[in-house]
Length: 338
Image 1 (tube, one colour):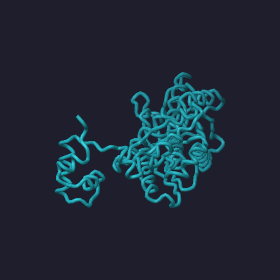
Image 2 (cartoon, helix red, strand yellow):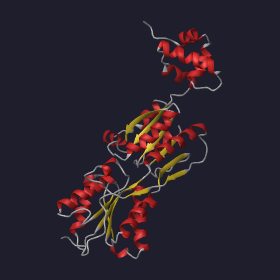
Image 3 (cartoon, helix red, strand yellow):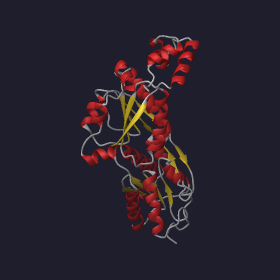
Image 4 (tube, one colour):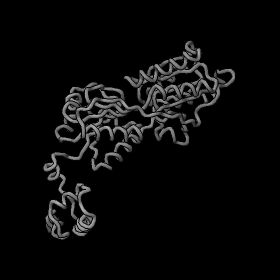
């Protein structure tokens, strides 16, 4: 039995094929009774539009390419939820690619998106410099989400306010009475913004001499190793502010292995408010980076740019908030290991 066609729907509803097309595109130029008749016919016949044929006729695929820095990072979960919900509301679908796989294979999956003729492209997270991404941004509407780079012509950037978020974390620890505070720094522009903000707040409180920056990366192992180095040095910190929640989990493991109890002996703050920070046995104090809001705003910026590809680029920052949980407390009186 052949699948129903748009002609079958039109005959069942007693309308023209062009009117069926208007209804399926969500046009508001159709009278309510006609719309109801078409939708009823679609339901009765089990009709599903031919996406390929519609793409050819409309010169659009109704798909958006999303290139993630690393699909293993839990920070992307809520951002993708916000991104996907807004795109879905506009009848668009996401195609996901993992930037980490790009680097492992030695090829750029951005080419795949351009070959598929996606309607737009969203680069999520800090990605390495890419000639393919630069070329794609010159051909299709593009938005960068959750990062501050690359900066390209006619490409909007939507991210959290990293300087404000780092300030919240640092001032929280200072407010608890900590003076020897370390920051496990990240990489790229975002890492630089958070590190500079940490240093500025420490300086404002006259604590430059007790501010420590230890370079890490985005991984749990990087957070673990950085914390081992910090806690093995003379004048160890009483508090650690990690670049992200994953590094914070690594810091927590290192502290416990070295016989320190969190937060009694060492306070820890993460960043991003991922699901990891909300696990009961971790219950990590962290900075909520407004990931869901960043995702929805990035989707809206892309929709706006699809409508007006040549408008000037813009940077939009979502406001973070501090989530105080169980890994921060005032320092012990001596500040030394029991």
